[in-house]
Length: 266
Image (cartoon, rainbow, N blue to C red; front, side, top):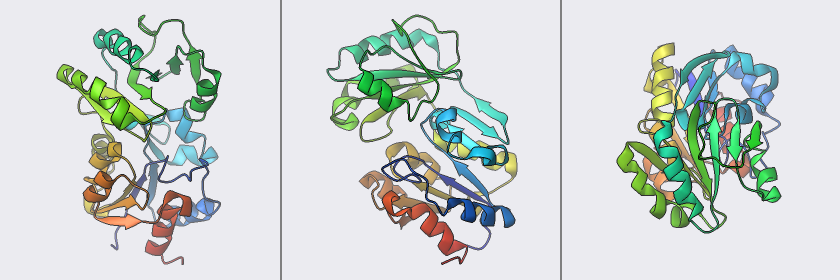
């Protein structure tokens, strides 16, 4: 492991602790990565604004993979923008409405949209979707490029959402459990792994020069694009099975511990 040029990390449950905080050590470690010409890339199911807000003036130096691979920028330039076809959106949303306890967020390039009146949920999603707007009915056509439909269930996405929504894969859509309480629906082949591969090709960086960190099923594809793939100690069992190595938990800032070890900063 002596020629890493690209380090890619999921955000929630991986790079951020459970309080959604960045380690205070990050600025110092980031500067060391810059000196060694190693690009640091956050990759998340969040909207772009929900990721870049953590990195301040470093944003114009970095690449970001947002919306589970549906939107990617590098040094503030768009590298890839996807658009979910509108024809199935109404059917998906109407199905979600029939799931007891489920709440939907439609994530677009301009902002995220919701129709719930639940203020507690609205406050909760504001930390992930910085730009958001309430609409009376999400089944109407939106004047926006829609990347994905995100669904939340307070009792667990794998048990309460996936069984009812996996059928939409027949429309050539990706239906993926993206967190303990979240499920995402996107165009087929839109995932963090394919976005990472596009970035690798753009920058002429190989999987052998890539280190990746993740904790949930929507990270599995990008773990497969790196020679040095790490599942967090707190990761889903399927992610640990897919990764080659294990990092300390997100609450112990395992991403930075691993990077520090690689940089011999311990």
